[in-house]
Image (cartoon, protein in one colour):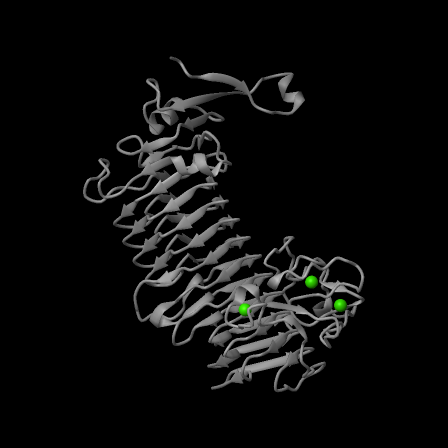
Length: 486
Ligand SMILES: [Ca+2]
Ligand SMILES: [Ca+2]
Ligand SMILES: [Ca+2]
């Protein structure tokens, strides 16, 4: 049976007047296309290779190459989790492609572009002796969406995906992938990938980036991701064994993510580690990440870090700056053993923040903490600072336990002195331009005429605009941020 079905893609009407754009649907497995690679080889730009539920392995179903074709390889419905789970590419040590080690499911190279798409597949069991257990993207800029990666391994970097280039990875789930070096799920070097709306759990790496490692010059964007329960597999002696590690000169943006319950093992765990890099972290909830010694929410070793509108709770150290510079603005740092620490000439510039329920701020060995318009337990000198109970709605949560972060509510109570106590907007002071920012709820950053201290902006009384969800994990809108030096 010839399963090709010609369909007309949605194109602007003026194009239809001239040259209709025709695309083929090539179904796998069929006699004409017994493997995914056979369908790609027969296809042309715009075609879709539609893979029926089943498990695919062996020659033609691993080490799949597009050779620059703008073809989509997808399951029958990438938006149906049951179909995604039932459409499996299995590579790995018992893969006939390479009985000794296996090869990745997909390999991307230039000129593969955004029209080269993999969607709605589950990729399992990959194991590569070098980089990328399931996918190697050596340049190019493919699109990978709604895929699931389970139990893939790399003996080097990138348990599931190793990449360079400007790929888009969205709506994917990474579970139980591992690397012996960097990036338990994803290791990306250089350029500007977009990683969004993905979930990372139970991934592990020996040398940092338990879920994601990004390094080298480039601007990776990680947004709307859940990064929880990832681990460091062994004590490698490296510092900064974080769930998300940003290293070696990257200029990363991390927004609207939930980074919780990751365990850095014996070498110091952290939610996010920024090393010799520039990073902007905005509108994230970072809670209960562990590791000893040095367990922390956010760590900065050299480099230049900006953190805005974030909630950092439940760590041994909330935010640490070991050398380098960190601008922390409109953050709530609460319920950590130590709130903020600087050492080795690190500088933290803290503005419009709440540091409460931690031990005192610490600046050691040449470190410096400059605080303005903030509420600091124990007090701290500086313009606009206060020391007053922030009246969190329920910092222990209904279970009465501050250590169970999921139900803790750090919104501002109606009588909090942190309301309208941040640095006032001054048209002559660019440091007070909050336009485009949102608070951690996705609400306007400035309400009632003046910015509040902390991650939460309190709506006007009676507005009905502020559902007091626990810690408001439901971040609602993408934020903007303003880089500034206080
Ligand atoms: Ca609790
Ligand atoms: Ca306000
Ligand atoms: Ca709010």
